[in-house]
Image (cartoon, rainbow, N blue to C red; front, side):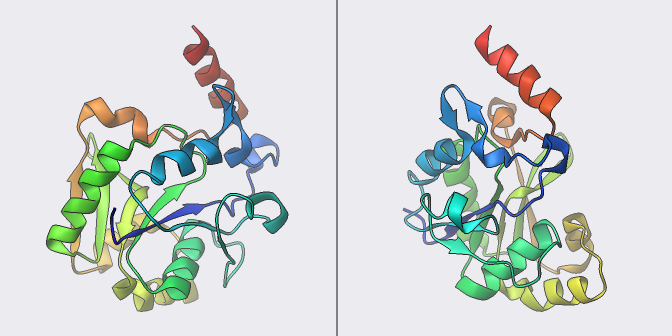
Length: 193
C-alpha cells in the first residue's frame, strides 16, 4: 500500500451532462465512483472525495469540503492538500477505467523522486486529473486562486520540480474521462458491442 492518499474530485457542476453527477453514471452495471473506489483500494489505504454533495457521496469515502467553491479542479486539489497535508494522487470523478497497475507504477515513480508534481502524460498530452501532487505547492495554488488563474496546466510553468510519467499505450484507457452525454452513450455502446 502506498503512503500517498487518493482523492477523487467530485465537486464539478456536470453542466455538459445536464447536471447529472458523472461519478454516478453506470458502466457495466456499476457506478463510476464504485468502480474507482474498488480499483483505488488496491493501492491506497486512504481514499477521499473532494467537493460534491455530502448526501450523495458520504457513503463512499470521507469527504473534503471545498474551501473556495466553484473554482474547478484547482480548488478541489487546494482544499484536499490543505486539509490532509500529505501527497495526493488526484483523479477526476468521470474516469471509469483507472487501473491499479498504472497507479502503482506512478506512485513508485513519485516516491522515488519526490517531485512537487508528477503529471501523467500520454502522446505528449498532460493529464492533471490522473497525477500526484505534494503539499509543497499549496502557496503556489493559493497564489493562482487569488489571481483567478485556475488552469492546472499552468502549474508546469511555475512549479519548480515537475516530473512527467509517460503512460504506456496499453494503459491509455485508464485516463479516459467522460464529459458529455454523447461520450457516455457512445462509450457505453462500444462497451456493449
